[in-house]
Length: 521
Ligand SMILES: Cc1cc2nc3c(=O)[nH]c(=O)nc-3n(C[C@H](O)[C@H](O)[C@H](O)COP(=O)(O)OP(=O)(O)OC[C@H]3O[C@@H](n4cnc5c(N)ncnc54)[C@H](O)[C@@H]3O)c2cc1C
Image (cartoon, rainbow, N blue to C red):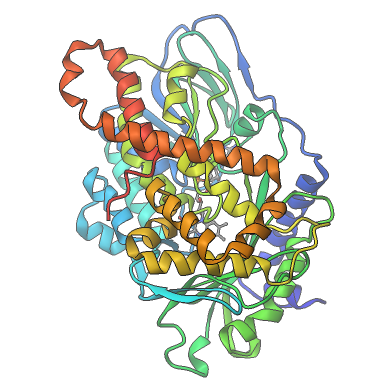
């Protein structure tokens, strides 16, 4: 029996069985053998009547958006194949990002405080044989998903929402005036379907026509108690991103660590492609248990493992995903709106929550539910697109020959410059927001300070990726400029029809969010 099986099979809930299921999925992804779902059909007929305004398939983050829409008076159904219950493991986020829940009236300040399970300061960013820096108030709050989702579930029901648990989405027919949704043996009719079924949503897979992911983040980890056995202060701070090894198994390994209510959470993650020869999650977990003692200066025998955590997180260059049909929109992980670096989907949903609620509210009010109109809600965002190259630069191809410390050297060079530029540059980046002025100055200064390190990145990522990135970089500049101009346009609104106003509002938001200018320190 290997170390991973030995430890995971002793943790309550049998995560060992879950790991094997996740590895089966990962094997199928690498083999390119996943069937393309065909649950979405279209018909050029009208429904006799439409009972609901919005049906949301997938309730984990669906309840956040569902509650906001129900509170605005829309008739909302939440479909969940299991039970609406948050996972035990905290979501880490920065405090400012959480305030939207209070601003939108979803939670009171006291309720929000009640959902915060842990907080700490400071957090470290460090790379093998390179930079080490510390920041405050970034991803330092641990939200308890069980409490948060329970509070929102109550608010959702009070606002008149209908929750259908143990009711799996099976298929949908898009008709001229609505959608008919098959779920758990019943048919629901609605004006709009929101797909919040996560990374492996069957609707998103059909919209992407079964495309292979362009990148994968493999993550494994645990939450355990006992880290303070050798050092009482060992759990006072966290790591946002740390490495202490050179390239291994054609991967650069990164670590995260967060103080948690049940001990300390530690993750090992790496960015890779979906090539057939890539390692399994179990092999990565073996490496995690081999390296954890060195990373945290502790022996495995000193730890009491409470939970095992793991995931295969796919991402696609064409993100956010544009709607494939009228009346269906992806939101949350299924939409690809989260950063391809952090995969912090809870943080990403909260960051976009205001504009999603406003956009959907207005779309329902003026009946802009066609594919093109909904496409503006999930429109092109250069701030996400430019991040792709960063992921690419941290990835090593299976056949690629890089210097053993090349990725660490590049990251150290970039973070040294960002640290010297100050918090205004560093903090947005660590919270998944890339802004044009900060990016332009960081690139220029890194090129001057470490020209040889930068030059090595070019053959690593390849010319096509670099050219694509240059286009997105120009897009980021253009969005920034246009967003500044559009801030002055509020007075002319009275002249336009409600539908034109819907388009103007969506464009204004897209420019702001797409340029990272929604970030406000
Ligand atoms: C190990 C790990 C650690 C993470 N840590 C953080 C963190 O610290 N901070 C952060 O911001 N993010 C974190 N994330 C990411 C975060 O958990 C996700 O981004 C978030 O859960 C996405 O929510 P979602 O509702 O879009 O998708 P999911 O969480 O995948 O939820 C999808 C929902 O849809 C339901 N569903 C699926 N299929 C059907 C169907 N056919 N019918 C009905 N319902 C269906 C599922 O049961 C589920 O409830 C982490 C992820 C992992 C794997």
